[in-house]
Amino acid sequence: MLDIISIINTYYPEDNQLRHILMTHSKQVTDFALKLSSYSSLSIDETFVYEAGMLHDIGIFMTNAPKIQCFGEYPYLCHGYLGAELMRKEGYPRHALVCERHTGAGLCKEEIFSLNIPVPIKDMIPVSIEEKLICFADTFYSKSRLDKKKSLSEARRSIAIHSEEGVKRFDEWCELFL
Image (cartoon, rainbow, N blue to C red):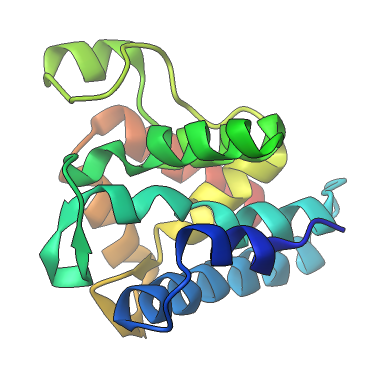
């Protein structure tokens, strides 16, 4: 099994509020994804879900999101592809895909281009069942409200604000995982 704590320690060496936010949120998402997996008849790699769930937001420290203690230079929407670059550098390309594809309910290149989102213009939509599961679980938790799990309608609404295509994917995942 991958030593996720060692990887997290590399990028979050200080025991500070940012690390607390990352660890709490990642554990919430991972625990929910594993709970959904345990109810599923689908063939899901739960070890990978644990690892990738805990690492899906590894890139947030490079972004500028002061409300969650991120004081980097990039817009927050970049955290997925930035985290993917870190995971590729660490030698984990499969984990990188989860980082890259989990933002919102995924981003297609048409949305990226038309909305002028500051990320590479390519499809970043979850493909594997594990990618979809982690992305779905992530929609229920916010790093700015660690004490609250969103209801199904709140999670759906948070996707709808940004993307109709994302809502379609979210609804498909509801059928798949709930």
